[in-house]
Image 1 (cartoon, one colour):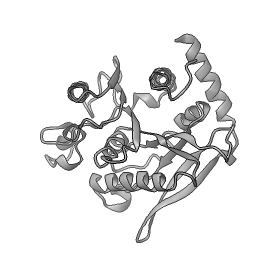
Image 2: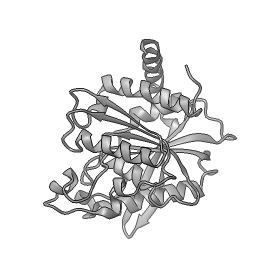
Image 3: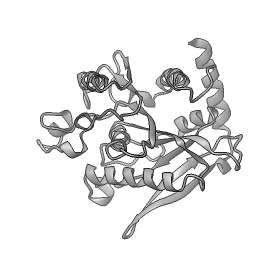
Image 4: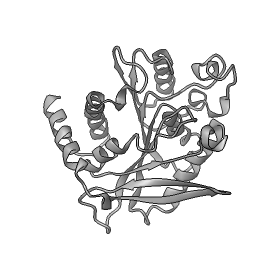
Length: 265
């Protein structure tokens, strides 16, 4: 593991120096005066005649705050693995007065937009992964709710995701008992659920680790692969720290290699 982390550290250092020409901003949705954009990060070796494995990463923030650059470091890691990385913004309560349902609608519209415009953005539409942290993890999961025919999403990469928004969930308790089964990932699992990896802290109070274990057990009842990596003594959003960025990237390399999406190093 030590050798692989050194490789990731080198790749991160190298790509932290890469040109801003490799990052571009595009609009995927307009609602009245609201414009929703995404950043697209291209590998340094980008070839405009090729289509690339692609990962879409939704930031967290409790559907209330915007952390648009939360996954910029992860995007550069994916670039080092020859992926295109995409980091969108979506509607949130503090800016738009919206609910989590509208945020999920934006996630759905983004995936559909990118799938329909795959060649324009050099996206290999047969190799699209979706990920996110916390509320962004729920948004990533929500993209599989309606993805029944095309199976656009080939894998999920989740950092302390919200997996339960039903009655008596931590999500509900933070909202004075309000809940929504319509956007509750644990209620939406089906056979077509893509392979998943979840990184979670054992002391997470926003989404208790027992919920994550329950989610894994439920997916496996459908014959779906769901790997969970639990980090002892860590709370919510631990993955934002450099130490755990490296450790989770190490595990992510193994996961992607096992699915033949990157070459093992």
